[in-house]
Amino acid sequence: MLKNKNQYDITLVGGGVMSLTLAVLISELNPKLKIHIIEKLSVCAKESSGPLNNAGTGHAGYCELNYTPHNNEGKIIIKRAIEINEMFEVSLQFWAYLDKKYPIFNPKKFLKKIPHISFVWGEKNVALLRKRFLALKKQPLFKEMEFTEDHKKIKKWSPLLIEGRESSENIAATNIPHGTDVNFGELTAQLLKILSKNKNFNLSLNTNVTKIKLESNVWIKENKKKWIIDTTNNKLNKKISNESSLVFIGAGGMAINLLQKMKLKEAFGYAGYPISGKWLVSYNKSIIKKHKAKVYSHVLPKAPPMSIPHLDLRVIAGSEMLLFGPFAGFSFKFLKYGSSLDLFKSIKMNNIKTLIFVMFKNLGLLAYLIKQALMSNRSRIDQLRGFYPNVQNKDWSPYVAGQRVQIIKNCPINGPKLEFGTEIIFTKNKNLAALLGASPGASVAVSSMIKVLTNLLNDGSNKSKLKKIIPSYGYELNNDPALLKRIRTKTYKQLGLW
Image (tube, rainbow, N blue to C red; front, side, top):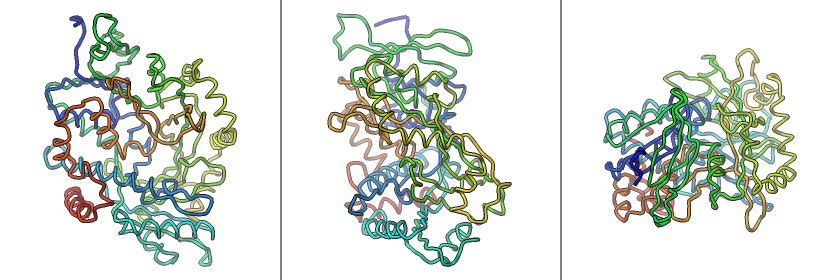
């Protein structure tokens, strides 16, 4: 044991909603474990978890058409939507548990009931939405979904979608009344309040992780070695070394760079594809009152699947606003507050072939991102007009959203590929985990972090403890309608969603 180092049971790199969720879960299961979170910035949740750096959608597969793709025969594939809905239900149960246990935890400050609507135009898209509805409506998780092609009914759901639209236009929509808007920044702040009550929790802000390595003592067995985390306090310009039995890397796009510095076998060949984002934002109250929903549509021509346009009501710190986007762009940064050298630093001998192959394979995507980055505000307004025919340029202003880094890896079967989604990497000995990728991200943080803790803390007692926190743990709600009804009724009433 190295006496000159701060010692922890688990260290979490990154102070976003993922790390804070994992830390609270661990604290609930075993409050005696010493937990350390390291955050590069002066406050937590300033990157992807920041309220305007993401869409704030409680992703449940209700309205996001990219979660229900169709095959060449036109059949709608609903598996992904069901999986995401199951995971979001886990998040809701966890928040309801914390709400009941801690007076300082207040879901009303970060969770709002806002309908989730899918809205499409054009004969082909209307037909696909109808097929999607018929496939999902049969599933217990989606039984409250409504479908209509009636302009008048859609106007009741959201007047903004219909005003100025020709009555003869072929349109359709689905609606789920109990959709949600989530302020993940506020959620992260409240999770931090809970952790601050635990004397075994420590938070290091303004601190950059410079190196993570295993103890070099050759006499220690490999699976018993601890991690040495070297850090620099950016404010004090002070170097600090910490020792930890377990490590979770939830540092957003910079996770790839950290894994590469470690020369981790499990991350060999991985690379990152940075994508920046922008919104159009409106604070005009007369417009906002006509759109009390989150409305997602179909992918625009040549756009990647994660760039589905959506027009959202957002509620942040009690203030309502409308967001439209995202408009993608290309940036060399891996974080919003990162460096323009991030991408170049991530290029290594073990991933350069994969990077080049993926780049040439996705030249169309690269061209799309460049085109999006160069779009004028007028062009963005024209795109919004598909949702809101009466849009006025003066009511909307641009805002730079968060930075996303998509996964690039070499798959044994399909070869080099660009992957849209999230992935968790574990070391062979299950003493380190790292989260890579993007959407649905924060919405399914609880399920993702349960996977992390059950691998890192392989304790037989975790299952029974988790069952008390997450009543559906170990079950698939979509396969048990009675259990789904019982848990949803209790959880949704607790959170004010019903």
